[in-house]
Image (cartoon, rainbow, N blue to C red):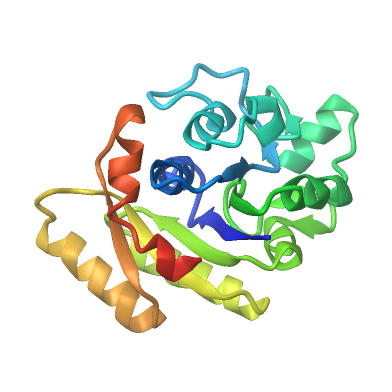
Length: 219
């Protein structure tokens, strides 16, 4: 199995758009790519402009997956996976997550929240990334606060032995402000990691946006 593990500095930071853009870019050049997200929560809430995470990922990949194939566990409340499962009276099984992801030769995995979010008690998103053995790509905001959040996520990944392939600031504006340019340079220098920008995109423009990312370097 090869691929990347997309995590984020926080929730609602653009992980799904980054992951879907990678999927779409790979599919557009003829590679058979699958998507995987261990848990989706918040289905009780109205979806945003890009729709539900697992639906977006299924539409961007080209392996014939349904949204339910992409995300083996799905819950209504907008809470952490371990709490969502507890409220539903279910237990999330890491072995099932690993088997689902490993069923594909090329897979783009999207985490839930940040690296230290518990999927189930005693098993973090970071543990899943370690078990899958994939390089990590970190989705981050370009604005104020991103230096600290990005560097903390880089450190948390490396502390577990994960390889951080890159940071993606999203959405990256066509005309970034001096602060945004400085943030990008600071994360790149202090984190000793390549930082890319994902252009503003739409569900129909994911492949074009993903083509701007150094996907081959990550793989």
